[in-house]
Length: 217
Image 1 (cartoon, rainbow, N blue to C red):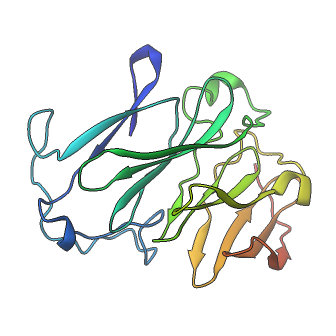
Image 2 (cartoon, rainbow, N blue to C red):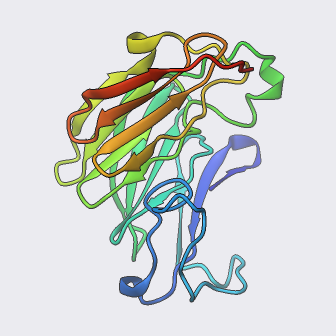
């Protein structure tokens, strides 16, 4: 996924072995284990516009988020010019778009000089998390949302800025949540309210929250 030219068209390139049933998954940032290491053995040694690419898809808007890859899908987030926040899903084997869901609107609150961050990231910097039934996505606006894969409907959503306080981070919120067991963890370190909070992945209800008092820029 990258910015392309001055139009900021995002393209997603997926590198997979021909036998999808034997390929590894990557359901969240740094992989399922959090180690950032894949056990996949059959990745292409070389790739270009002509080789090593199974399929590619141009995406609307801009984002720095990495895709979440499950057995059958590739899920990605993006932000469009009208401040729309989106979750898009593609068939892992064919690259055919399965759905495109607008889950909310919002922009990045960043008090730092705009010229230092605006071309680098936006509210769609955090990476999505996926399993066979759901996609979870967090945005720098404070939106946390869970999408039901079968129906394409929003299962639940929360506004963490409304719930816990506005972010005071020089270049804006870009933290990616972590799914572990039945809990979805979100970390927030700012000059203001800072915390780690765990949510029930099925309902979005807060399970516990630990406030943190650490210096942050």
